[in-house]
Amino acid sequence: MVIIEVSLLSGFIMTSRSRMLLENRTIVKKIEVKTNVVYIYLEKLNDESQTFILQLEQAIQVKNLQPASIKIYDYYQPGGLQISCCLGVGS
Image (cartoon, rainbow, N blue to C red; front, top):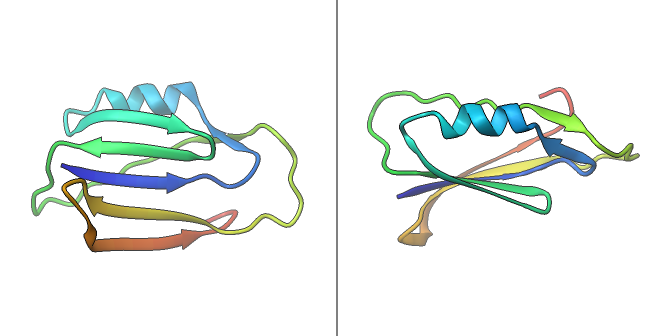
């Protein structure tokens, strides 16, 4: 199982429509939304390219936003290979 861990920008939340669209994808096993983090659990990955779109809305106005991060890792080996990137506003 693969986990995509998306830390949200401060003051932003994932829209319910975005969650519904993700849950309807066959590759997505489960979605957990916690404070400022969305976890997307995938059954498995293959060599096909996948695109995941999270629609966010600003719930609270925050000054000096810091970049958010996305991590992708194996559920059974979280300390193993990880792919990470950072995103800012407008990315």
